[in-house]
Length: 75
Image 1 (cartoon, rainbow, N blue to C red):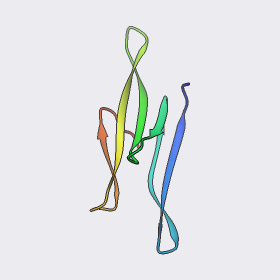
Image 2 (image 1 turned 180 degrees about the vertical axis):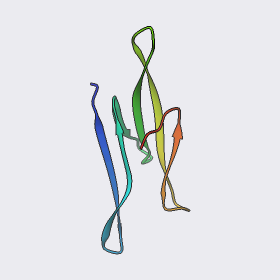
Image 3 (image 1 turned 30 degrees about the vertical axis):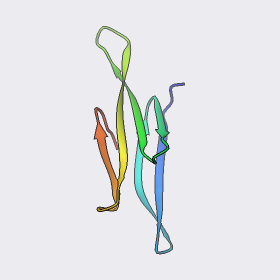
């Protein structure tokens, strides 16, 4: 069902929780079996209706943060 889902991801670093990712999705937010986060938004058409657009957040071990990619990513 449509929602305004907020996602917060924290990582324990030297005994302290550090916020590594925060985002909202107006349709859906999911995590897959590889640990990637998926953000789904409704892109409204001028003639009515909408289509789903998708963004993905993947953990970057080299930079120690999430990398965003996809058609439509909002943080």
